Image 1 (cartoon, each protein chain N blue to C red):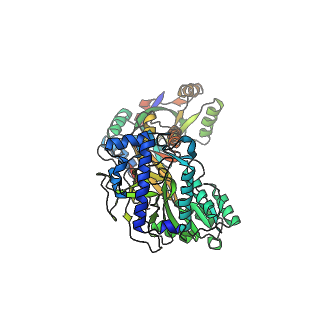
Image 2: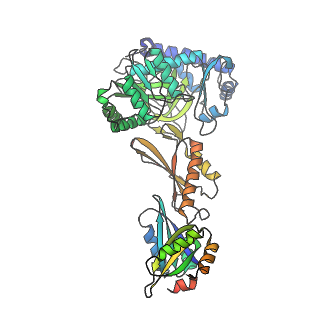
Image 3: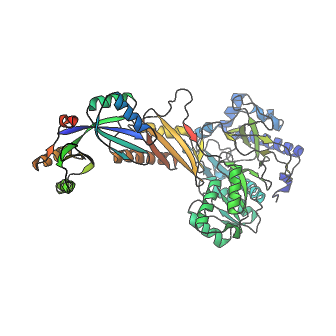
Length: 432
Length: 143
């Protein structure tokens, strides 16, 4: 079902005009009201009047995650703080979090794009949406919530975790739409099978899954086990949260809601914009955001775009599911992890060699991170319990920094490749 | 009264033990007794050898993490109930054992029990007071 026929099936010509107008408005406002953007544009020698067409966007400078962090907490605000009605942030595990501040209108837009997303999964006012994304500062929970409310569906705001209760609720309330990470949906299926739940007898029809990379194989497995249609959704805190792009019922690439979020694919080395079909770094501009707009934000996600019209009738550009990253970020159970964070923790601990290797595996549909650390002459004790205590200490420190559990394994010295040149620090065994 | 023991950190992967054994063979080092303690991830090989300093040196050179530390070697009669006697003695005197292993002497009716205590000095005192024979490095090496 198409939620907003006017905007979702708009002709390319009209859409380009709309995007042009919105970009001009965005750039003008950012230039006037936000010193950060004014400085950036001045440095690049661009004035708002230089934007005559959406394609002039290439004249504007990029913005990186580091810059977003540097202006924490309010540096990106392009309206008065009193106009902000809600705040969300990234987890901030790599330093200062990225802030998403929403005006009343921003929340309206969020509800709109999430309603479009849910409608792509055939969600209507008659549906019961079990929302197992986390509620709180994380954008997932409330984003889905607002969209489901906009549609008029019944929301079950169960948030993440507590698997047995999820299954209980799913049966008792007759959930028809499930929203969570793809790996968690498989975990639900697994536990459900142990509990002898026959998913084919439940009214489940759609699952909207995102916040981590997954694959066609996983989709097949999820659909077979949970007896529902699995839809890939995409979003990120820096832009708005979920609701940036989503697959339609054809499950053939993700429609970008480009009347609000303008996508570009660039060569990560040169910054040059690449044509349809060429893989590169995904860049977004929030055309309509008032609170914390971003102009040409480099997501570091790798994908490509396709402007060919989709059989569903929507005219929006589609992006392929995320193919990789331009940095070494790992997503483990929906949490972003950078090897540099792990290194930082290890360097702070005494008697630990800064040589480490990360092994990521997926077992029973859940991600496991193992951190292999070399035992040093000084830290080696011939008593097992001391070594095990050491492992636990490192695990605790990693948990504090990463917010996820990592298993620490002590290995023999000099068995991990040294960081001269390009060390292979990460072994990702997940086939996704 | 302390006996030198070598401990080697080993990852649980094939061939590691063979590598240790090869280094010892190549340097003509003889093993008197050994034990392995292991967890799911790693193991610790503990050995009494005839040339502990040399063994430590060559193993380190071969890239192993090695520690030279001390245990107590008690010479005991090779008979039923003797292990209980020793454990009972430790228990009564509040001696906390970290680990223990033993071997039987070939040409006598004696056995040797190696013990690692939290408090080694106190253990030596108690064993000596109770009439047990504690072996020196030299004696163990000649076995």
